[in-house]
Amino acid sequence: MIDYSSFLSTLRETSLDRSKGESLLMDERRRVVNYDAMVDEICSLYRSGDNYSSSDCIALSQGSLLFIEFKNQKLSRIDSDRIRKKAFDTICLFTFLEDRMGWQKRDKKYVVLYDEDDIPSWSAYRSRLYSFGGKMERVGLKFGLEKYRAFYSDILTLSAEDFFNSELYRDMEEIVL
Image (cartoon, rainbow, N blue to C red; front, side):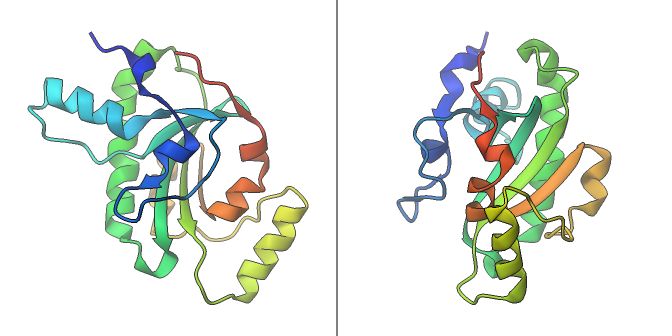
């Protein structure tokens, strides 16, 4: 039997890019579920180590589950195929887990957070203006995630800074397993 509480982690720990030694989010107070580690454990037990491609963590905000993928790299360098594979595998495995974790009947949102590009653009400035007002601007999805709306109540692609300034971040709730 798996002890799900052993997968609790902070946003800073979960967003750590080991190759760079940097975290995308520096928050050490808010606790999330390290979904990557949980999936590794489950796949080692039931799939002989043949892993699913999962999002990095599960957070709780405004009553919704957030499946967050951290991409600590410039937007132009992110592999869209891998993001789409993670969006699908994440929800497939979670469908199996949600009853066991007591999280059925919650909205599920897929969130991809990335590092802002070096070259500022008008859309980046506009997004910052919205974030100062505590709102997230609704713009077209990145990475070809439109077709995955069938699996999630919402999909968001945001810079880490926009997320940090958003209501989703401010309203994050404590996860209890």
